Length: 396
Image (tube, one colour):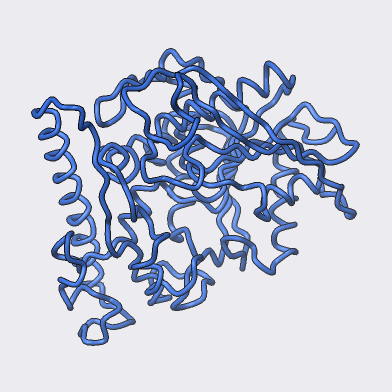
């Protein structure tokens, strides 16, 4: 199946989902998450004049997606598309991934019971990929009853409705693994980011280790990255234990994580090679992003760190979750991805338990398909055709 040569006019409809929740304290600013209810907002994109019983659901844990190329291209080609925002939209400082799963479940239940869609396809693009497989694993085999911090979040009684298929597109394995690949291991003092080990600072010209990096340096670097994450995790757990011992009204604490975008892949194109632009990344100059306000995990709370960023505590581990999904899976790697590490997509594909799984590479495609309309159309056609082969009609 190929997409329409003439794009459909897209009709956008604001969507509001509300459901009850009782929480120990408010973790999101505004009316979402307090007053005993969760409020989520999304955008339903429908091609004018086209009916469908299949809904493609895009969700990122912390971002909105309705203005990005991938979901809009799907809608312009004839698909009904829901861009679902979590309660933590545009602010992941206090984000709890187990609660994002509940938000996604509420959207899917609404789509089935209120809108009448018969088939749901989770399109996990970028950060939505690990969320999609996390959700599906718990919908098929729910096990979680609390967050990594020990707060009650019962997914076993949430009535999560499994999706009918998953598209894993230009997506990383997890937020924790992405941070582990990117965090700057040169930082020695979390309260003083200027206290750094020069031999581990890839942005310091005094560093004797320069691209192309030796295997020995990369091995040392990767060990140091994970060690830093685990030091932060240890401090988080010690601080939570201390707050609990005090037994006061102080239950949570925010903190800053400095220098979090120092993946040597961005400086050395020979590492996990693909077609990405050297010394550049999806957010611009990696050295600037390393210390900028939108860096990974820059602002966090204790609970959020354990749920999102801790290698040993986060449950949204793409590899572990993929081992529990049994619906058709299409894994798409973008051949010049400048955000997702090159091995991630294929590793997820290999870990998936489903018997019906397909891996495809879009040669030359960057993360956002920026200035690449022909490659965006190739990816869109691929998804339409793959779904049609499995009897999931996007268009009537």
